[in-house]
Length: 172
Image 1 (cartoon, rainbow, N blue to C red):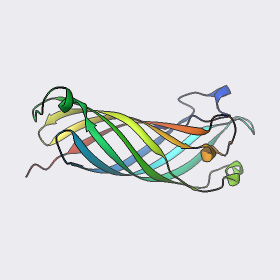
Image 2: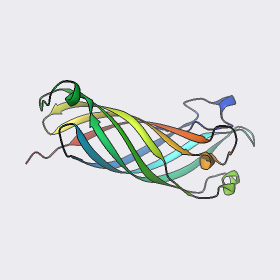
Image 3: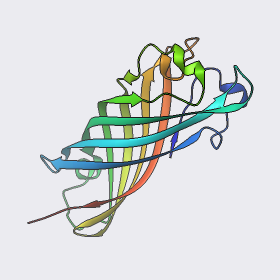
Image 4: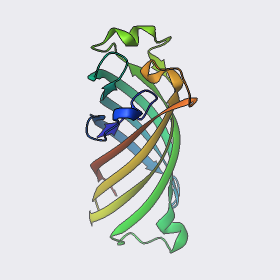
């Protein structure tokens, strides 16, 4: 689930009315027990209330590519343990986001359909077995102010994202 928090939507902001969907594929590599790298491709559907022309939902799609540095806090604060059930990770990265045209002409004033988001987040991994983890991921994407065609007030638009996934590890 993704969410858009941007100028102009605050009067009627609702996490449910501003929620979209996201799905993606991620490929990671651990260089050390505490440091890894993750490459991602995400397919997203954004939605938020458009307050300039009534209360219609503004809808548009996005495809994103990103790279994140992953830091395993569990291995830093305790010790490396392959049998640990729960791991806590933090990450930071950068990506590209292609935004498609929307169902509303207000997005026609956008200067570019390509954006460079900065990403910050945290992840909890629950180990089912040595090869399979369940992941809960909370992320904040910081985007250019023109993400939603509003260029007022706060210099950036924020797009939080919450996702649930699985990870498979090949230990051989």
